Amino acid sequence: MPPLYKQLCFRCKKNYVTVSSRTKYAVCFPCQEKELNGVIKDAKMKKFFKLPDEFYRENAFLRDIKINYLRYGKLSERQVEAFKKVVKKMREMRE
View (spheres, rainbow, N blue to C red):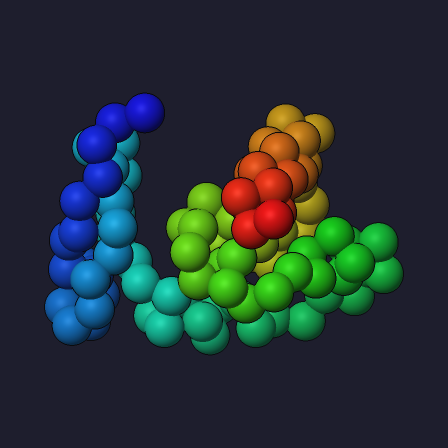
């Protein structure tokens, strides 16, 4: 895993975001919050994305997957698998 460091958000230039060398566009949670609050009509996907806000606050990948679903209305199998894998890791770390 590449080393982590803090960088200012590209949008607001106020909040710091934890990033790695792989991160291309660092955006903080408050800047993406409006995009995350879209309406999900599919009951299965509602349950899928029903996670504590802390998970979305801490992990930009989870935010990106949810925003992509809200924008395009679907996810690939690989995106779903990766999302589940990251959520599982985060839940294990909390225990």
